[in-house]
Image 1 (cartoon, rainbow, N blue to C red):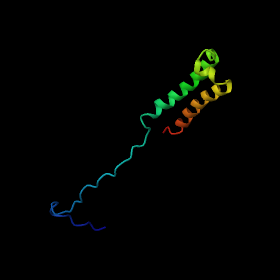
Image 2: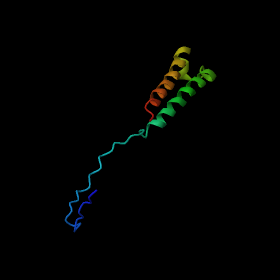
Image 3: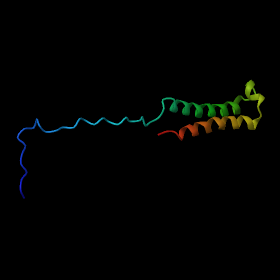
Image 4: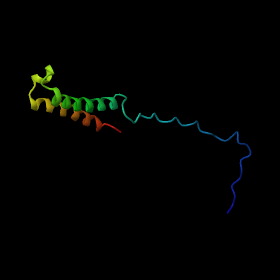
Length: 88
């Protein structure tokens, strides 16, 4: 196999400019996501526990019915699960 001729001077060789790195988008979680998700889980759980323990003595909870208080607690937990679907 024949060998190619070597260049006499490397200075005359063309070197292309370095390619710019493409701008990368941040792939990850927003800063607020984890605290909001955990907060919703905790608030929902606490709402249900407080309702069952001393719900008749808490002014806001005594205004709602039994089913409404349970649905409010599960609503907070549901929002927590909805936020968890955005977790990457």
